Length: 80
Image 1 (tube, rainbow, N blue to C red):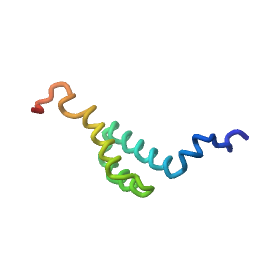
Image 2 (tube, rainbow, N blue to C red):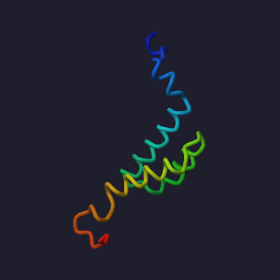
Image 3 (spheres, rainbow, N blue to C red):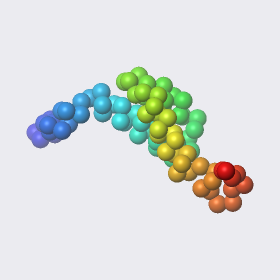
């Protein structure tokens, strides 16, 4: 019975917000798993419930900052 009851926080968050966060999470997971061929479709899907380009860019930027070439051992790329 308790599974059908939403908390006040869940009700305030809303279904649209849940879809947006989930779409961004899937994009983040695809980037982490290096499944780049899936990213375009995930981005298009994320835009459907109203995820803004800035939010998508933030996920990609965070991924690049954490995993970019300058972070990999033996990288020849340098940032000046």
